[in-house]
Length: 93
Image 1 (tube, one colour):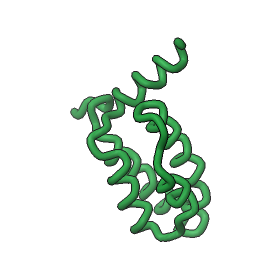
Image 2 (cartoon, rainbow, N blue to C red; image 1 turned 90 degrees about the horizontal axis):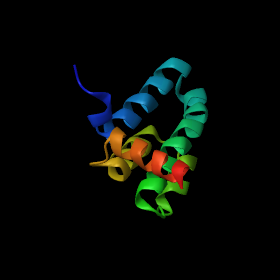
Image 3 (cartoon, rainbow, N blue to C red; image 1 turned 90 degrees about the vertical axis):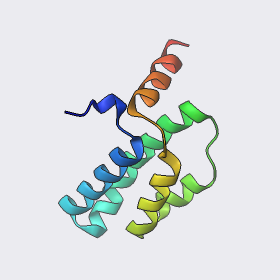
Image 4 (cartoon, helix red, strand yellow; image 1 turned 180 degrees about the horizontal axis):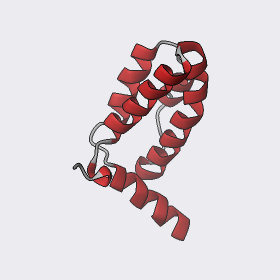
C-alpha cells in the first residue's frame, strides 16, 4: 500500500480532477473542480510562495487536457507531506 503522504501531488490532483469530471460530467465537473483546484493551489502557494499567473489561467480553463497539463507542471515533485507541512507551519506562525 502506498503512503498517501509520500504520493506526488501531481498524481493526486489529476486523479481528483478526473474523478470529478467522471462523476459530474464535463460541464458541471469543471465548475465543481475549480473550487478544489483552488484549495490545492493555495496549499502550493504556502509551500513555494508566489505562484505564476498560470494559476489564474488554470482556474478559468475549460479544456481538461490543458488543466491536466498545468496540474502536472505546477505540482511536479511536490509530495502531499510537503503541502501538509507548509500548512501546519503557516498555521503555527
